[in-house]
Image (cartoon, rainbow, N blue to C red; front, side, top):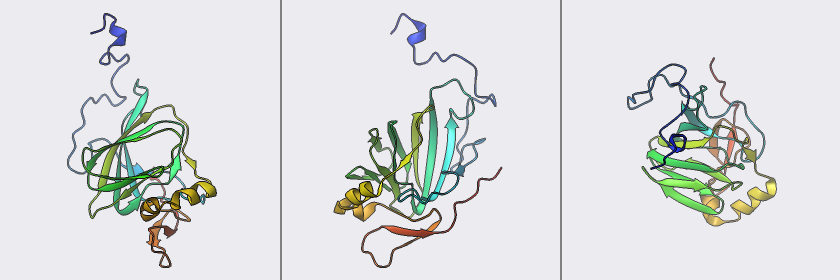
Amino acid sequence: MSEHPEDSSCEIPGGPPPDGRRHRQFDGEAWDGVSPRVYKLGGSSAPGAAWRDVARHTLAGGAGEPMAFQLRYFEIEPGGYSSLEKHRHVHTIVVLRGAGRAVVGREVFDVAPFDFVYVPPNVPHQFVNAGAETFGFLCPVDADRDPPQPLTTEEIHDLVGDPKVREVVRIAEDTGSGIRDPGSETHVVIARGAAPKQSP
């Protein structure tokens, strides 16, 4: 144990979250006081930037709490997937429910509850629901972080050149409801539609 209280992981300066609540109950669907939000605002026409049926819950660090990270929970519905992206910050997830597949560079992991996935900096990654129920995972990240970057066309071609990645990765033209490309035996998706709007 440290002789310096400032080194303790339990000694956090500042007060409670802005709403004063230190405990939030989970009712099987959501945490009380935490509204699900759309995964990302707006759409992007960049290859791989589209996503489908993803909700984000920010549990801590998004409302001015004195902390250097955010704790988020994501849910991906059956048939859904996150955007294919990369960024300089480290990315981790801990699966809480459902079944998914995680593309991390040229590796593909089948994941289930309590599995942990580490994504190194600047490595392309995507999370895909692989089951018939909601796929949910915790995702802690630095509060101050760089924004996600879309992959270049060359990076996408390099990734889908690997058969195991091509089988899993979803690449769409635009965010919205997706359909599988009927001319392909891979899971590359052509999506049509507009991004959902965030409610006020």
